[in-house]
Image (cartoon, rainbow, N blue to C red; front, side, top):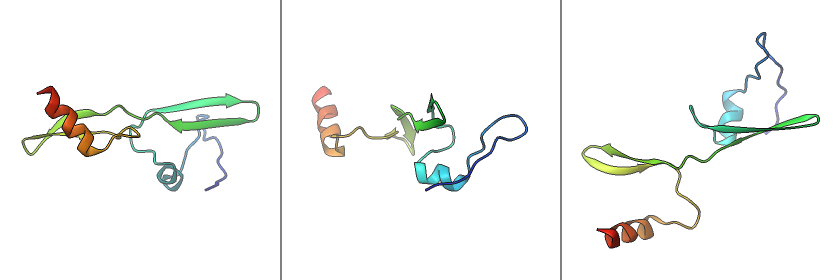
Length: 81
């Protein structure tokens, strides 16, 4: 997806909701900006996630790393207990 952007009155670059959605950027998502001559690349920094309690159960709140399935994660936790 491409879009034309311009700086606002405070020299910020506003990015539309459609662009953020297409890039998979959520509210509060940490980002990395790389500046090169004539371009700026903004990319998501994957969050490591955390365990949170929902309805009395611990659940993982974050992205699952590549190569990890929910079954392998549960089995490794069972081995630790």
